[in-house]
Image 1 (cartoon, rainbow, N blue to C red):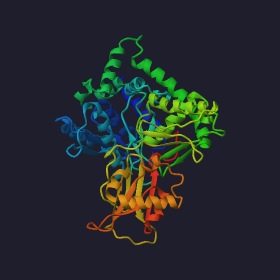
Image 2: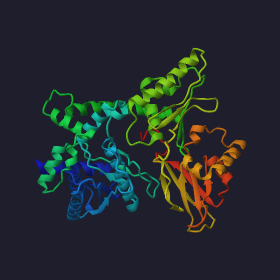
Image 3: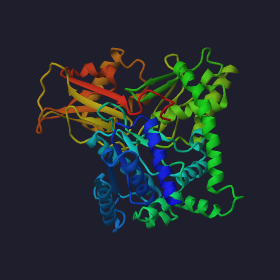
Image 4: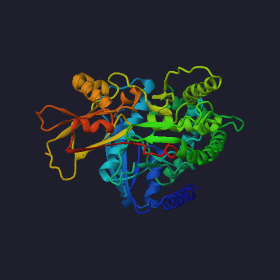
Length: 490
């Protein structure tokens, strides 16, 4: 039976590679050492060929035995003929977070490291060993967080790799989850039949972590066919939610093409306010579509790797509905902005519709980048891709470096210069359409002509104001890490 399961899994992944047109591309395998990822490596080596695969193991360094396990994974990859890298996380310079946030921070750092490997090898597709049990956990996890239809539709087969820089072709690497149709039991049997050693992470049984607690609930419920918490029941509801999501998204994409504007250089989404200011605009006239449109806008702006919670969407939604009710009743509307889920929503004015921008960061929340060489692309604040390079035809020293600051950090260093620059931009109407909340979350860039030289400002308050700083020899490009498609990545 195990041999049949392995053969079926290989055929399944081969068909998937062909359907996604990945046959001529190298694949990066995320291999932790657990049974699911070890089975993935075994299956992928046969479906795609070992020479077309690279494996990476991210050692979080939380357990004494993790280095030994990562080395053992490397030996198995060598046996399969797959190139293997180990990336070890260090926590000396990064304060280890409390237990409540440990999973989240470790996940972010793991994906960042996987993205770095993608950059090193110019790989744009990452295969992970997520299986149907993980899908059931994700559904239940999002259910208790009060996610909407999008969140309850679970993990997609293919999605953008969080916290990753684009590859050479300017495309952000994607995660593909080829084993979502297989359960953990099947993957265990494939490993046993193939003589594949795997490692059980003892921290997976620590119920202080919410996912572990949910995994235990599902495992216990799997013995009871009548339980609503067994994996089969959860996956049936998830599949229904996926169908609803896909139906809504087909119409929503067309609707947002007409009623949404994405300012990728500012990290801002604008949703139309409607024609008369009293009736709900078309994107907000249906409650299900309105919820999904808001989820797309909020998810695009905050760049989190999970959908926004329903409770947060309800805050935005209630504010919008109340606005139009008051307008229709002829009442004066002095509505304040709404900030939640890392996003600020600004009410419409004569100049703009509903604006969604990044919530103003706390002091020190956005780190100053280290000195970067010209031509380097940096992911700033997890949402904007920034590159500074010499303009064509201009000769600039290779010693020139650049940094990116948040507005608060830059004000400590260049307060007078920034105030003068902002005043000039306002006088010349370059900031006429820029709301203060949007202005406050824009990057500020400086350059150094030599290691011992003084830094000088070259970019502040958006591209409309850049020429006022006279950086005539430099080309500064800023774009959103999520591109311009609101629906596809959210």
